[in-house]
Image (cartoon, rainbow, N blue to C red):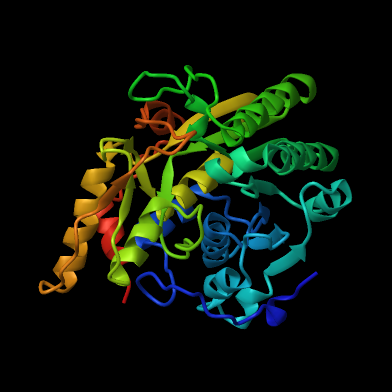
Length: 359
């Protein structure tokens, strides 16, 4: 167990944009309007991670009680430090941090005590890493998620919002991606996310629970780790350009992705948690709704850097082989998201990149 006062003050190896992230005021206003007026207790698994720490920060800004459950295998104490940096002492007292593994049933049951809402983000999240160690992904993503579902059921919590992935679309060739059609998974990571959706269906059928399976597309924003072999493309490329190195593009650059800024992920999670009851599993694409090729992404990053410094020279990217397990083209249909939550992500890619431009 860790208290808010004992969180390490280690500095991040790379800083995006402002020293401390603050959610856009218009989205905070929307959430204040949609959330119940009384203070509730929220469990955020993986709360020390990139996405989880932003959820924690927004909830604290909204005056909610928050429990973080994280084993700190990939999450960082520095992310929590950033999340509470602008908080006063009264707000910091609303946060409790548990260090533990979601694969441990006893840990999950302890974390769930007194909880009103569950935002389950904890997972292993790399396609290449899953190809190297599929058993680890099954243990955490499938087994750990099942234990969270069971702990919620035992605590009498009827709704769980959890992070799924656009990877579940696999070899499905339809564009844009619609929730009803998925293909064969192209990686153990994709399979693990598809299986968690099946477990949600089972719990909904057998126990009357309801779930929101949020199929994240390509999320980016402050606190995203740019380092390591499995880093996401945007922080990795921005760090590479910052260090005046050459960017590598897997394939010919025509591969497409649908990028979504972290504010929109946070808003979607909180709206899903507090939406009217709807027994069953609601699968939602969570994306920007725009198809961007890797070549277009690189040129946009280059342009944003040059806005900051017109004299900056940025070399052309180097192409290499396509990466095994990657989906070739991806863009989301957002009709169901808009219908279910009356919300559409609205942060344009260029605007989001400007916010995280390294200083």
